[in-house]
Amino acid sequence: MMASSYNAKEEDANHPGAANHAGAGVVKSKKPDNTAFKQQRLPAWQPILTAGTVLPAFFVIGLIFIPIGIGLYVTSNNIKEFEIDYTGANIDNPCYDCAKNFSWNSTAQCVCAVTFTLEQPFESNVFMYYGLSNFYQNHRRYVKSRDDSQLNGDRSALMRPSKECEPYRTGEGSPIAPCGAIANSLFNDTLQLYHIDSNGTLNEIPLVKKGIAWWTDKHVKFRNPGGNNNLTVAFQGTSKPVNWKKPVFELDPEDPENNGFINEDFIVWMRTAALPTFRKLYRIIQKKPSTTPTLPSGKYVLNVTYNYPVLSFDGRKRMILSTISWMGGKNPFLGIAYITVGSICFFLGVVLLIIHHKYDNRNNSADIPN
Image (cartoon, rainbow, N blue to C red; front, side, top):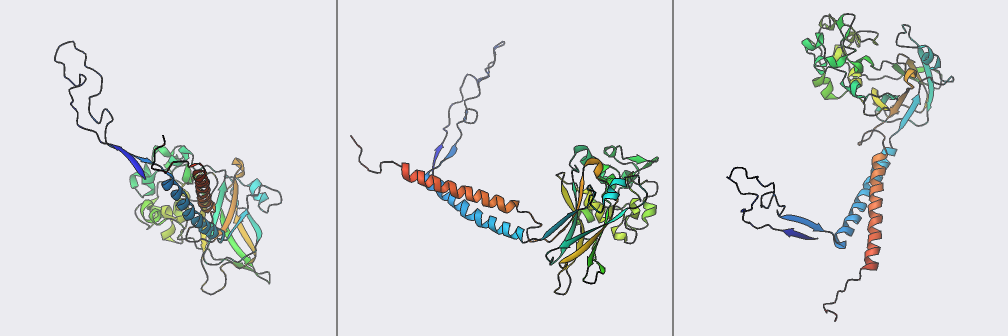
């Protein structure tokens, strides 16, 4: 690769614009000083692109990106994923009655059962997600509507939440814990999964509720005030969020390590999504010690305690079962992107090589024609 460069030489700075005029009333020149920096004469390097450097670069990029893209795409396709919508927007959906009759003010629980079939068995650990559509967690005011000091267990912030939490800062004359719109809209559907064996018996699938949040969130960002002992006393003088049916210290009273602000379902929800259609990890179905699949193929029943209405904002709810690989969940975009970029580079390399070979009329002779 050839390159051009320019080395500046020292020049006198005795330019009229650089001189200091001591006489009264003389206007100083606005012309920049005659220096290499101000006159843009600093040393420079500029690559001169030639066919000998550009063509190999295109071919190398293409030959590297295409195999990587194929590997990523194949790996993504090997991930098994199943998704079922249980919004209840259609009359033939088992959750239709719950969706139509349930609201935030409802006191009675509504339970519906959705039957589905897995055509292929799911091996290894299976991750259960809940998904929402048309829910804008990325809205600026929504994202700011929280008090991180309160969530970190600060006593003063617990009793005097940040003004960013308005209008979910106080309720019934007491500070709300946790305050803000994010916490107030906590997803609270309860999902239970059952496998129907050949005899028609329902076998409950054990769902692991811990280990679904980021380690840093669980152990650094979120803390209970005064530790995890006697949360009823720790949260005394506060009120629950408006849309919650129970206070924060009753999220998981059976497990002190998963109650209050350190409840993992709550922590997962508080990490806002960037897009209006998103999924969040709900439970983990751990691999069985035997060689049997984690979820064998066959019929299943999803029992839903319908607590989260979404039809008011034209939203959708779904449950997703998925395995993972070394690159995470199912996402073919990265593989397709690598294959596309590699193919374009390889194609451009071929085209430029043909053009270079056909129209390169440079005279390689050392003789100078008359």
